[in-house]
Length: 548
Image 1 (tube, rainbow, N blue to C red):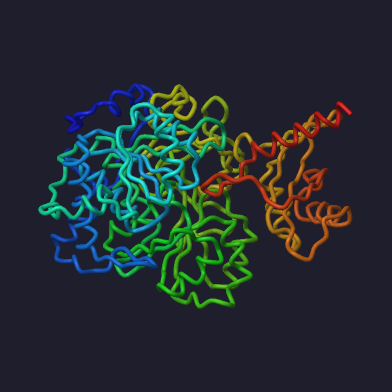
Image 2 (image 1 turned 180 degrees about the vertical axis):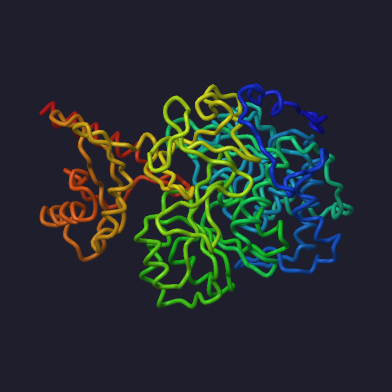
């Protein structure tokens, strides 16, 4: 490893043993980075050096910043961190705020000063914040003043958090007041190593206790120079918009890293549900949108009310994109949604195809710079057409923070994602299910997401989640939790209609033998469906039924 700039060596000390790392490959010329690298210099300062400082950079409903204005704010925050808080390279800094220009500046400032960002979702409660603070041994926090209540509760519960600095409250000791100090407008980037940790992203906890994933300065640029360059293929005049929080690596990449790497602009919305995302696309002239499949589906019925003619690329990730949603969006807008799979462990998308190679229903091909295959339980590559576990390796990969689950995710040098995929002869990858979402009923293997896709093609279905429910006769049955569209009755007749619809769409044995209508589905802060929660509910209901 290269000599670290970190004075606080906690992150490097808690990397998994090198023998447990995945094999990293750097097979593109763009991925050959120098040993000394601060990624913020490449993402931001380089544009000022090229005379591009007056280009639009951060756009929001409240204010717009050029690259030069963002750079100055980054420098001022970095000076506050170092001079006023006493942050040293390697310190972890918790960030807590909705998406905003200040949140962008704070993230970049921490990294530029040699720190490590630990961004958190705005809706997290004190207990969840306390976990992150303890796990990452966080000493400092920057927080939007509107979120102070849970932040203060977390500080009272956590040990080691020395200082919280708030912005947005006009306090004499607040972030803005300290930023105004003379001489704070300039800051020299910390001379970090390319393999110094600069980001710890916590997984969304869909399968248990969140894991901290550690990423280096070179990783930040690598996702831009692989997926961003070869698949997204955006340009300097693009304007990026989306709904994912910056605390979610999908959002950080799509809303900050990709646009800044090419000198484009990012549109920051504090909240971006479909009802707010569509008018924002029209108002700010967005050209590239990053959001989840459920959002695209929800926006379909509202398109006629908004002019989104500036939009030219749409990216979907977070969960599988149903072909029905892809087809409907294409028919309504003329835009092919760019599906992709990424993970917090890998930082961003590693399978996804550029516009000209998109195949409806497939997630895509391995992103240039990455290799992917489908393996069996022993790690052997499966032939085309046979489902198995997805394995991937490339310039980014899993390094858990002090976590024994490292050996579960990384096997024989490959990142094994926990997804079941099938690869065809042309090396397109077709999603089957999360590996723990496979339903075994009377000896049949049934992918819950496949049943969901079939249900979503029925006009009565707004959302659905399909899981295994215990059954004495069959071991498990397929059970569907369904959110109906307005105007449809949640009665036995509708349930039968949905069952018959699935029988006609896919193999009849896969139909949901139980249908339960609900008003909402459990989701993570990033919008992922929590099927494990549906499985828990199904198991509890089955146990109560058996006991009665």
